[in-house]
Image 1 (tube, rainbow, N blue to C red):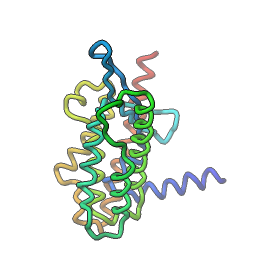
Image 2 (cartoon, rainbow, N blue to C red):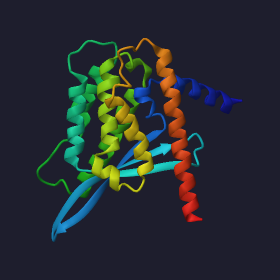
Image 3 (cartoon, rainbow, N blue to C red):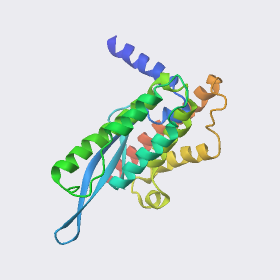
Image 4 (cartoon, rainbow, N blue to C red):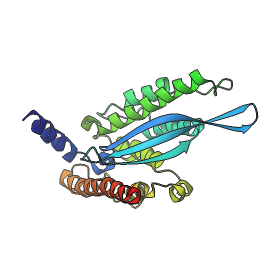
Amino acid sequence: MGTKRIRKNRSQTVDTLPPQVAWLDDISMAVTPLVSWPQPLYRHVNYMLTVTCHSRNKAKLSTWQLVRSFDEFRLLRKRLMAALDRGHFCQAECPWLYTFLKSYYPTSQLIGSSLTRVMDRRRKKLTRSLATIRSFLMSKSNHVCPLVLMGVASELLKFVVGKQKEFEQDCHGEALVWLRQLLQRWHEGDLDVKHLSNHSNMLSNKSIIEKDSSALCTNTMAKHLQTQG
């Protein structure tokens, strides 16, 4: 009985998510250091962004990875802060997120960026930052601000999808196809928030996205099992 109640409550929460952030419901993100040696005695560090799509059946997953430099993570922070347009008036928690990005996000340093302790500290902070941004976007109280739905959510989606070259070379391209289609809809104005009050339209779009994401995770796992068989 308790399990059914939890599932019902989760379903009710998911159904109320606007399409601009609904894709995040089954998404988790993690960051790990990626070390290379382009020259003797020189260690170069990038960071691997691992994105996992969890289906309703937790045994079925779709995962893809993108390599990001630390500067690219810093650029994401800059673009998110610009999207928040500091000083605007709204009922959301935009000032809090702005302060979080400004104060908590790991800083650049000229010396020691390849040290193990520095990489580990950055890994933890970048992973937590992505999780915090996701939680902020998933919070219903923040959906009242158009800058959140259009600016912040859009910048995060662009970062997760990657550039065209990454998309073409990625071995888990099926997941990226779905997200790129969502991003394309965004560019074409299908996810405009001019009519935020028309919540029924949002729920209709959300149902389409939710079905697509569930099919994506299921089909990707099925193909993987067939290949192994």
